[in-house]
Length: 303
Image 1 (cartoon, rainbow, N blue to C red):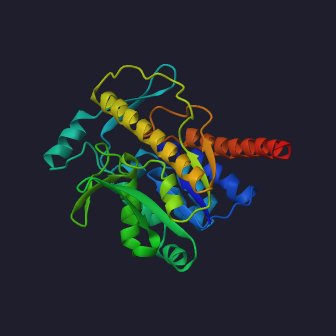
Image 2 (cartoon, rainbow, N blue to C red):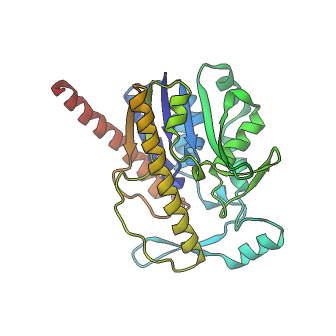
Image 3 (spheres, rainbow, N blue to C red):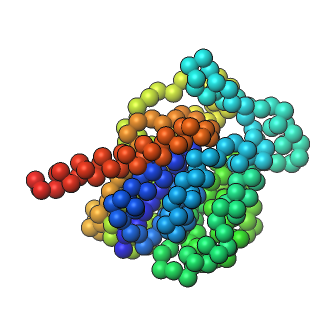
């Protein structure tokens, strides 16, 4: 059984979409299992439907308004053209006064998911042989959970995709089935072992981060910067642990594991969604996957 795993990574999901497009359309890969975390969960249903151009159009045109019903930060360009983020104190205060537990809310994203993935498409997947699984973090029970499309109805599955993407405290904290849920990346940002546990014998893994750390973060200039740096530190540790465990499981169960990292640092602000950059990242992902597979083909005859 072949599986495609796509990690979390916010706006960097556009790069992952490009890699997946090459693997499926050009390289001819077919997968039985699609497993995603956070931004990866937004991609996998459409990839399983082979509607790659459709999700490409969504990814390369999404913006802050499509994600946030209450955006907790301001975005401005510095003199070098880089995006700088700072807290929107008034919006955050207003959100707290409303009784929210988070700085911002991402209810627009939930609407976008329903608009993008129709109930008819959901039923096609449910009747088919492919499985689509999203990763969520259950904060109440302190565990990671994997939600299969085969085990639920349309509305619940859209909820779980949304929950998988909710990067708290900047996005919505969702209470479902009596528990608080958040971004799957807080527990399993690269769920390789879950794919193997579900029977995969070959796994293509798209990791939306460089293989080796290529930059040092600047000191935090505000509360947003501090929390963002702290989150990035934790997510980076979780990612490396997930990959190490996945490699160990693959070696011991004779599973073929193909890892596709981003070759360069795409952004240090993955909550910023910019059309031009995401369009370029999708193209870069496609080109990188093509380049890597050419290298692999050149190596094989010598083995």
